[in-house]
Amino acid sequence: MKIVIVCDVLGNPNNGTTLAAYNLINFLKGRGHDVTVVCADQDKKGAEGFEVVPIKNLGPFNLILRANNVYLAKSDKKLLSRVIAGADVVHVLIPLNLGSLASKIAKQAGIPVTASFHAQAENVTAHIACMNSRFVNHLVYKYFYRSLYKRVDMIHYPTQFIREVFEKHIKRSLPCRVISNGVNDMFFAPRERVRLSDKFTIVCTGRFSKEKSQQTLIKAIAHSDFKDNVKIYFAGCGPREKKLKRLAERSGVDADFNFYKRGEMPAVLSGADLYVHTAVVEIEAISCLEAIASGLVPIICNSERSATKNFALDGRCLFKAGDWRDLLEKISYFYRSPGQIEEYRQKYSEFREQFRQDDCMLKMEQMLEETAALARQ
Image 1: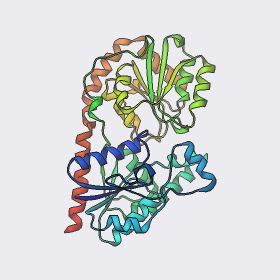
Image 2: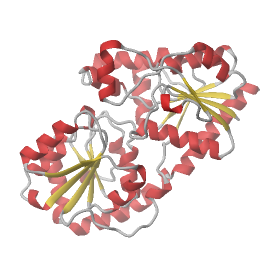
Image 3: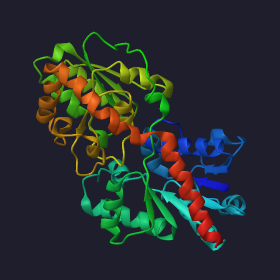
Image 4: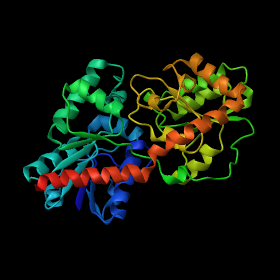
């Protein structure tokens, strides 16, 4: 098939959406499909299989976006029309201007459109201090619908959770498939466990941003009676890194903040004792699934705005959103009962198999092929 993938925000593979995009792109290319990616990454100019549009200038908002390593694409109708012509299917990754225009051009040309749902409203409103405003978040979901999803032949939701959230806001059901973005095989591969530290070690993965709420973990350990025997590894990057470092230092918590290369993460995860997922807003959290695939037991934030809570096997693996006392209680249980960690690892060994990336990508390929076939009938 000739597939056009349109992504307003691509960038470096340092977040779940970008990783999901590259995983799909690479898988489809590996399966022999003719894949063209339209994005605003200026370093992709001249690269085979990429068409690059300019970066959108948003004036004073540029500083906010750059602080989060985000660069928005400027729509280019002429380029999109040329690239989309003759495609079997157009797949859009983000419901912003470039993807919206691509969907309009494709529909006018009679070309089917599929689209993934990678952006929660809170991922947008967190940048404008409105993350907790139900009204503003509702308006964002309505914008997503009008901008893109009302024209889409098939929506890809990574989780049933985000499907239900979106359909509740737009008050209608749309054609869709629920397919996990999947976990790479390197996280499932058996490996020798090399401890990261002599201390009881906790890994917490995710962007250093407001909705990830890493401060809850720092506060929990700061109030523990075993603080001196714990080390936390925060894997990620983002605008709140300095603030989190200061909090850890003031609290006397031994914490390491680092951005690890993709290939380094399996060793980091397998070298820890426990994984804590603090995010209060999350569509799927592949980082949590990667930890589970690596053999770590997770303790997950039980936020009503996060799908990740569904990865908890029981209440021992959940804590109340923003409640460091409850988180400390759950960490203490595993800290004081090391035998329970091994027991829970065994419990998770079967659960994790459903998230193997190749199986998930095959389902994505099938979705694209079936959507394209329907348009030819």
